[in-house]
Length: 188
Image (cartoon, rainbow, N blue to C red; front, side, top):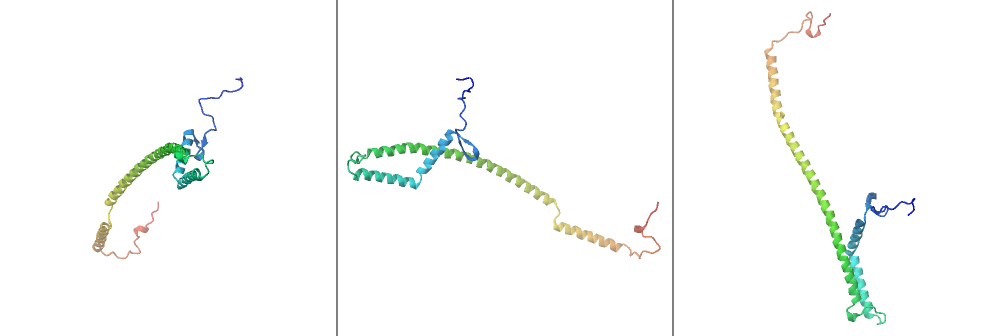
């Protein structure tokens, strides 16, 4: 190796090989493979896939039954061995892909359930806090005077004032010669 060239670090993956996910996040190989298998499993569960597979099998059977013997490639007398092999191979790959997709969905569901549980705990704590606050407000409002109590107090004060007015002798008009205490000006 030449002295100017740097040896590649084999312990770390090469940059730029991982695909990019949402918001620029890196997707590793397992995640990419998982998404790919989920796509295949999702595609196998559609009516279009079932229709295409049925059409493929019907065409296969029709060709190998009705075509001239020289053009046939799968013998009906042997039970369409090639078609059986193809369908078995497809099933042997489809089953693990479907299981992998289910496992990934279970993992996502588990994470979602955990997030929902934490949110429910926060909601419960908030609800309990608000309930305590409502009880505290009710207790503090209970100590406040109500409308009837204020009316009674005002009536009692009014009766007291009326009684004081009735007990005081009628005061004559203030004399012009006597100074009014409120209007006295003091000089210093």
